[in-house]
Every structure is written in C-alpha cells, then in structure tokens.
Amino acid sequence: MKTLVSAQAKKLILASILAFAFTNAAFAAVRTVTLSVPGMYCAVCPITVKKALEKVPGVSKTIVSFEKKEAIVTFDDTKTSVKALEDATFEAGYESRLKQAPVKEGAAK
Image 1 (spheres, rainbow, N blue to C red):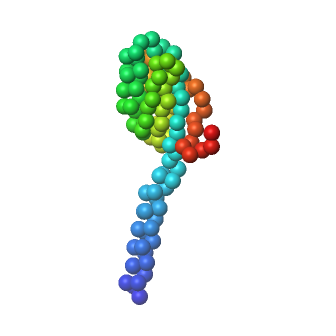
Image 2: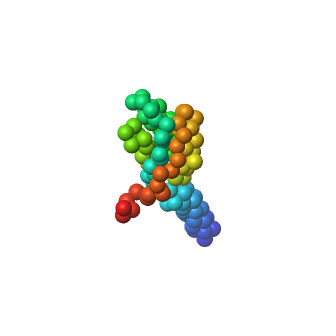
Image 3: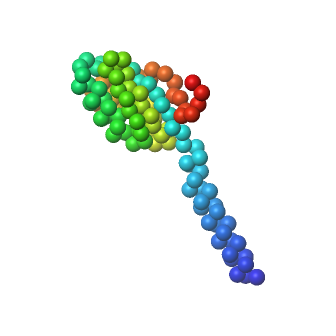
C-alpha cells in the first residue's frame, strides 16, 4: 500500500511541476505594434532602427520603412514591452512612439 501511495504522490508532484512550467506559456501573446519614428532622415536610418529593435529580447520580426517613417514590430509580450521598444530606438538615436494599439496575432483586423 505504501508503494502505491508513493507512486501516486510522485505522479501528482510531476503533474504539478509540468502544469507550473507551462502556465507562463499559456499566457504568452505575440503582439504586433507600429511605432512612429519621425527622426529618420536618410536611407541608412532604418537599418540602425531595425538593428536596435532586433536586439530587444522577445522581438521576432521587424519591418522599418523610411518612406512611412515607422517600424512594425512583432514581439512576445511576456519578454518585452512597447516601452522597451521605444527605449531601444531612443538609445539608437531615434525617438519613437506607439502609432496604434497592440494587435494580437490571429485576431481579426
């Protein structure tokens, strides 16, 4: 009987550990935002902005447009934030601000 209870206890502990490990993944959301970057004045500026944004943990995709003076960034919101993205462009020499509200991937537009 003691072995049976011990085996059940082990299964319960293992199930609890696995549930805890995957809890954060269940709440992770991929977001896409558009940042206005009005200070880009030449064709090299988007390269600098793109490199700065790609260094931010959690960023998976970055498209920077010189013509539109904006950056479209896709990121994991459990690893970074819009503020961190804005800070990254600022540190690279380009102020940016959120142009639109975050959009969840797969959401109807």
